[in-house]
Image 1: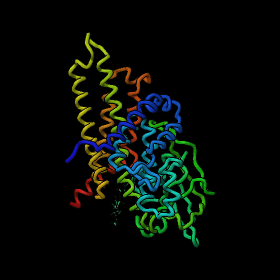
Image 2: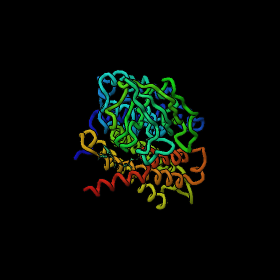
Image 3: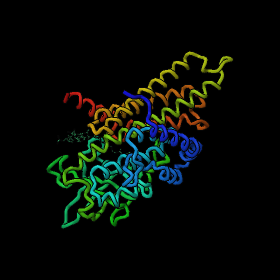
Image 4: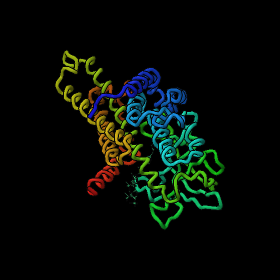
Length: 380
Ligand code: CAA
C-alpha cells in the first residue's frame, strides 16, 4: 500500500492549489453573495485541463487518473465549492459516461469539446417525483423511425442554466421498470428544450442549477447512449464515479473551514492567551484534522478502485457518506471556534457550513448511500 502521491498527482495538486489560492479563494465570498457563475474561472480551468481530467488525451482530456481527479476536486473545492461542483458535473457525470458508453462518433461531438472545456455538460436523472427513487422516471422517449421523441421534465440540474448538452435519462418501456430506462445525448439548444430560471439555494450559490423541460424534442437514434433499457445501469455506474467527486468536494470544503479555524485560533485571544492554547479548542482541531484524513483515505481508495477497473459502488458510497457528514461536523466546529465572527458574513466559516450541506443530499442522500453500502454487505 502506497500513501505517497505520484509525481503527476503531486503536480496536479500543486497546480490546482496555486490556482485556487490565486483565482478562487479571493473571489468565492463575492461570487456567493452575488450568485455569480464564475465564467472566467471555468475558462481558466479548461486551459489547465481540469474539465476532462480523467478523459484520455485523444478525446480532449488531460489523461490523468481518477485519484488525480479526486485530488484536483479537493483543491478546487477548497478554494470555491461552487466552482468544484461545476467541474465535477462536467468531469464525472457528463464526460465519464460518454467516455464509457459512447460510440466514437458520439465522442467526437459530445466528448472532445466538453473534455477540452469549450462546452459544458450536465446530467439529467432527477425529476420532480423521482429523486432517491431514480427508477420512477416519467420523462418518455418514443421511437419514430430513426428518431426518438422526448417529452418530460428534469429538476435540480446542476450546470443546467449554462450547459450545452445533457446526458438525459428517459423511459422507453414503462412495463420493464428500471430495465425500461434509456440514456440519450441531447443538445440543449434543440427545438422543444426550455430552461426555468436558476434555482435559489442555501449554498453553492455561484453554481447554477435549474429545471429543464422537454416538449416533443426530436433526437436521432445515433444520439442514444448505450442500448435501449441500459439507462439505469449507465446512471448508477456514473454515480459510482460522481460520488467520489462529491466526496472530494466535501473534503475541500471541510479543509477550508479547518485551515481557517486553525489560523484564527492562533490569532484570537481570550483570557489573555490565544484560544489555540485552550484545550477545548485543541481537541476540536484534533478531531477535525483526524476526520479530514480519514475521509481522504476513503476518497482515494474509491478512486484507486475505479482506476483499477474494479466495481466500487460501496466504496464510493462510503467515501461520500463519510466525507459529506464529516464536512458538516467540521464546518460546524469551524463556526464554533470563530464564535460570533463565525456566524457573521465577515468570515467564510458560515459559507463553508452552507456549502457543505448539499454534499449530504445530491448524487444520493446519506440515506441512499447507506442503502448502497448495506446492499453490498448483505449480498456478501
Ligand atoms: N453499476 C451497475 N449496475 C448497477 C449499479 C451500479 N452501481 N447499481 C445498480 N445496478 C443495477 C443492479 O445490478 C440491478 O441490475 P439487475 O436487475 O440486472 O440485477 C439494477 O441496476 C437495479 O439495481 P437495484 O435493485 O439496486 O436498484 P434499486 O431500484 O433498488 O435502487 C438505488 C437503487 C441505490 C436506491 C438508486 O435508485 C439510487 O442510487 N438512487 C439515488 C439516485 C441519485 O443518486 N440521484 C442523484 C441525482 S444526480 C445529482 O444529484 C447531480 C447533481 O446535482 C450534482
